[in-house]
Length: 371
Image (tube, rainbow, N blue to C red; front, top):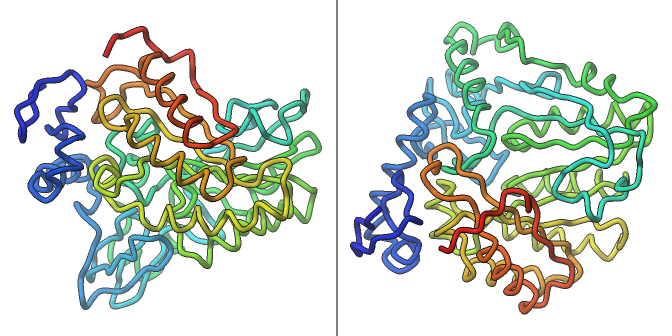
């Protein structure tokens, strides 16, 4: 593929973007129209807003860092909030969430399994909760099918339904009480992921409250970390007190690269990660805060990993950091899988940056490509 900006040819340039990572970092304003076009394509195919709504007369949503200003009759960036007659309407709520769930035998293959307090709990299980919805628009999304569920919810949200959202029906709706009842005597932990749990934060918090009334379980989160600070504090207290952890997926360090790959800025993510570092002192083991980065060939390179690792080490060098192998998916299916060379170079960068607990994950996906 030839970069549409600098004309360099490389197999590590995704067709959906059409530009290389050097041009994204160096000529961001110039290539921004191409980036915007890519995300309009990825979102319009699922009837999602093409960009973060910024209607000056719209209703404001403060659940995540997008802080959507939703126009009358429109939807927020995640597709799960709407504006009906100047009122913010939630298609999902504290009582009900759009999700799928399953019991995963412990120890699981989650991002934090190598440092988790349940890594030796053979014979027990994790309640894995996959929420439909996200505040990012990752072009490489490994779990993009949740968008189809969100699209169906949006199509059912007619003006009449929005006036009384409790009439909205969906086969994927699970109440917080029903979900909490899935915690049985062999369930040691709950992990909320997706998509991302933040668009369903009210439901996840209520489910956690009900579950903890029944049994002591670890509460864990896999998230892009893009929530409002008031929710950050709530999930932090839940995980800290229950013995669980919060796993931040740090997609990139450069804001320009994050916008190119994920549609929005990462400023709130990095701010929230920094805020959570204050909690680390309250519980050293098992680790409270864990970071991961997907090594997207051509885009999440040694430079990005080095910057992320230095950021992590500046907060606490003991924060566990996983470098995850990429599998071609969604709108970046034309890229190769992460090469062993790429992963090992990034591992070296992270170690040199001062991170003391770092590993390569998904090693079975690594290729021997020479890129």
